[in-house]
Amino acid sequence: MTVFHEKDIERILSALKFSAEKHRNQRRKDAEASPYINHPIQVAELLWNVGEVRDIIVILGALLHDTIEDTETTPDEIKKLFGDEVLGLVLEVTDDKRLSKKERKRLQIERAPLKSMRAKQLKICDKICNVRDVTNSPPKDWPFERRWEYLDWTEEVINGIRGTNKELESLYDEALAEGRKKLKQGKNKPIL
Image 1 (cartoon, rainbow, N blue to C red):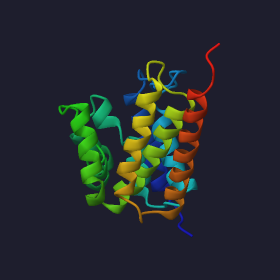
Image 2: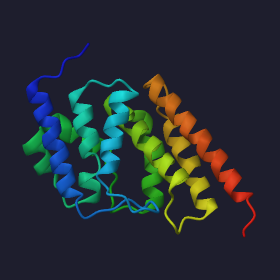
Image 3: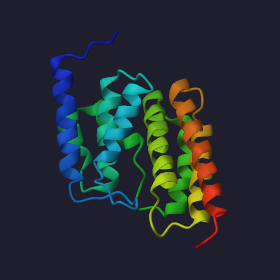
């Protein structure tokens, strides 16, 4: 059993606080516009509880994974506060927002198999959370086709990193199957 030391807990709380501050004015795209910080917390929680990941770098990376991509956070800030390894992981899962959405999605599929084990585990949890959100509380302006395409795209990403963490992959498969089932049922419901 891995035992986390006081310093590890301190680092996790510091990353949680940093992420909460950086995402403080952001909301998820879900129908409820839930606080954005819920997402990195869910990713970290899945890594810990389902994937049984006890690597402090991965947990910190999960809490910080969207800060560079979706806030004004700089790589230097992460490096200074959390170190080179955490920065490396965050950068590894960060999309280049200067590219088109289509290109970013293509690159995620192409580059997924080349990622580190840490990044692959984080990526699986990120996709699980996103699939659940698109299934259960999608953005209001996302029609059926866009939601279905999103699920298909996540499957392409995950297929490139299979063999990473059996428990996380099983949970992803369950979330994807449930998502497709719910989407099909919703499409076939009569409009009242």
